[in-house]
Amino acid sequence: MFIKKFVPCIYLYQTHAVRGLDDVSIVETDPLRLVSKYVENNADEIIVFDMSDNDESHEEALDIIKEICKESEIDVSCGGNIKRMEDVKKILYAGCARAILDYDKQSNIDITEEVSLKFGKDKILACFSDPSVIEENIDLVDKYISSLILLNPHIIRETIAVTSLPFIVSINQVALNKLLEIFAYPSVCGVTGNTINDNAAEIQDLKNLCKQNDIPIVSLKSAFPWESFKLGPDGLVPVVVQDYRTDEVLMVAYMNKEAFENTLLTGKMTYFSRSRGELWVKGETSGHYQYVKSLTADCDMDTILAKVSQVGVACHTGAKSCFFNEITKKDYREPDNPLMVFEEVLDVIKDRKVHPKEGSYTNYLFDKGIDKILKKLGEEATEIVIAAKNPNSNEVKYEISDFLYHMMVLMVEKGVSWEDITTELANR
Image (tube, rainbow, N blue to C red; front, side, top):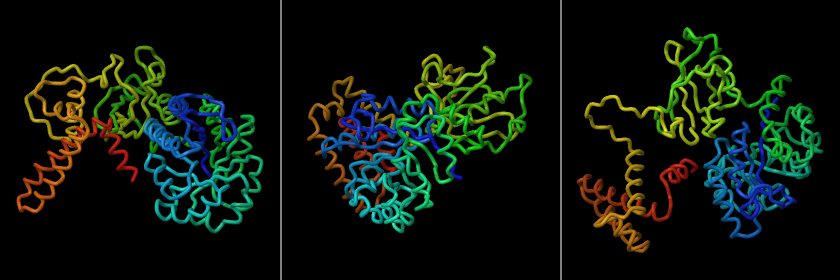
């Protein structure tokens, strides 16, 4: 039996989230609010259907999908408006984990092999409303598709009869108490659609219900039982919390067994408050949740290191980290962290744009405009080529540094961040 997933769906039409593929009544004007809602309620993945009806709105939708992927702590799969391989590439480069081919369209069936060979079978899903189309193309599906999305929940048995692939079922008008019946089918690996969207706040309760009925769900598994930890006199284990991107230490808190188990169940850091004598989910009041990336015990099994994705700030004072009261410091040279150097230089350039400084070369470039910036960038690129022909590598180093500076001026001018760049590279 496959692990069962709860997968809310965003039907994207004219920049808004609408009711469904056949109903464009608006349910949310800002789709990013839905993303936050679904992630906070412990959804396992998100599906987005781009319902735009022309090229201009499709490009607009892709920009929103990029923001959805950036906002989401869970995988996003996207379909809609796919006509050729280039469209699949745009979806994946937007940050989506998978692209969804529409098997109700012959054009999507025709590109299956091409896109699967190009991007990998695990990146390609197919949605359909009639199992006969799967049966007719079963060799193609079995070889080049990783899983399916069934748009008609009334034909689960017919789908199982034609393929052994796992499939997500879209349910829009099914009572919640019917979910266990749907999950009882071994090939069903998840549910999506408005039944999940409308009941997002109940996802954790539904997961608990599944667990009680021995239905496998997505949850973190601990390699060690709670009894393996050496507890302090108060029965707690200290937790050092670290930003998984930057390795910055954010805070220290404590867990008891219940907090530990709730962290594993929900994927959100849960602690035991020594002052209040109760559990607390970090961010439940402020919205500054911490999503678990990893939990690691130290050599003595008496401390946990938690690497997290921090929403907002970690400290109740509004500081990013709780560690800001400098006690003493010896002068030393900080080792250069390449990403931090890039971020610091970009921050200076951003500040120059907002707070111009007389005599600043950066402000000179901004004042002259995009054409001047592009001209200088082109000149520096040429200087790199010339320097590379010389035997001294130092010259190349200098010219690349000049190029990167001018490139960062362009990034600020166009509103591009280093995270945008690194995410784009990671998605390729």
